Amino acid sequence: MIEASGLRFAYPRGGFTLSVPTFSVAKGERVGVIGPSGTGKTTLLNLVAGLSQPDAGALKVAGTDMTALSDAGRRAFRARNIGFVFQNFALVDYLNALENILYPYRVGLGLRLDRAARDRAAALAASCGIADRLKSHPGALSGGEQQRVAICRALVTQPALILADEATGNLDPETKDVILDLLFARAREFDATVLAVTHDHDLLPRFDRVIDFATLRQAA
Image (tube, rainbow, N blue to C red; front, side):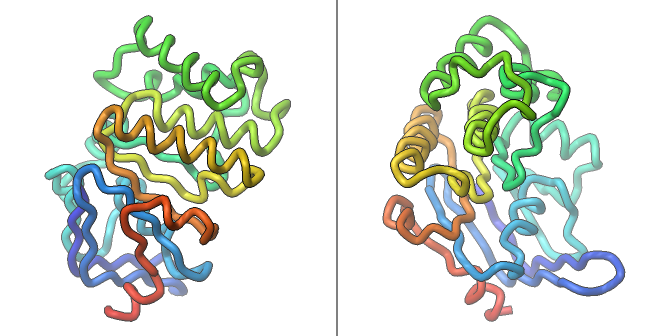
C-alpha cells in the first residue's frame, strides 16, 4: 500500500528536515507509529496523503507515484483513496457535524453523495456516540466530540488507506478502546490499511506492527 525510499523533505527557511531511507506498509496492515515529538511523524503522514510533496525520493501509495501527480491530481487521489484523521481535527466551522462527516463528497471528484453515503454517515455517528450531535457545529462540540466527527469523516468514503494522527488523543481510556475497535472493524470491512501515529503505548498491542520513528530516521 505504501512504498517509500530515499524520502527527504525540508520546511522552507531551514529548520526541520525529514529523511527516511525506506518505509513500507503492506495492504491491509495496521501499523502504529511512535516516537518523540518533532521527529516528523505528522510530516510523513502529510507526504503519504499528498498534502506535501517530498524534495527527493520515491513515494508510491496504492501503486500510484505521488511525486508525479499535480496538486489537483493529489487532491483527487486523496478523496478517492485516503481517509485522514487530523490531529487538530480540521473541521469546517460553518458546517454542522453531519455536513463535516460528508465533506469528502463536496470536494472529491467522482464521489457520489447518495443515500448509501448518508446512511453510512449516520451509522458511523451512532457507532461513535454522536448521533444526537449531528446538527451541531464544531464550536458547540467538545474536543472529544469533534474528534469523533473527524474519525467518521475519515471512514465514510470507505477508503483503501486510513491515516490517523493521534486519533484517540482527546478521549478517555474506555472510549479510546471503543473508537479503536470501530476504526479497525471498519478497516477490516472494506480491507483498508491503517497507518496511525500515537503517543499512547497502551494501544500498541492492538496493531499488527509498530514502528519507532526515531530509530527509522536514525537509519538515514
